Length: 262
Image 1: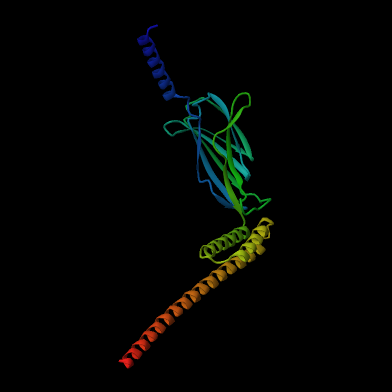
Image 2: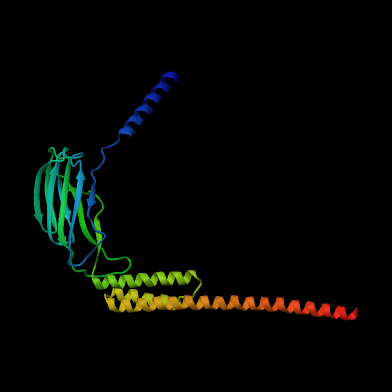
């Protein structure tokens, strides 16, 4: 094989590799959400909708599985064709469901969830406790399963936990401001740590009180630091003034002595 022929063969192989790379494997299906909350009050009703596009881009048949931490749940699965017309619908009750899908004209699968936010077993300040709103999986023949998207989660709260969290966040901001100004906030930080411990122990009233005291301590330290700086600046200014006046008086006395000598 001569060098020209070899060069042409390598060029063709390289071009073929580029074509294969450009085409690549079919993209996996994914899902988007509408109305999914970031936080929700315990006992409140939640509704969200998840949309899966091109459900048969990889497999002609598979099972859609969904799970949630909500209670009193109803799932509604709807199928739409490419024109946006509904071609199928089915509902399921419970915290999980399985819906068999076989290749049809379905271009889009819509999953609607309706449920109630349950009681929280363990509240935590950081990281904040979360519950699963919905988790969707593609289950194939043989039982292999793959998540269609990352789970949708939200932070549950009660009025008391929300008030305590807000108080702690205010205290954190006050401490940060005081620290940035150069104030000592050791006591405020210690009280804040106690407030967070109380929150994690679900003693929200105590957590709010301690957070308030931490904020007051931080603000007091900041004011004291500012007053100290003002006194220092005032003292420095007074010293400068005394030096200027003293210098002027000294200069004047020297001038008077000089005039007398003349």
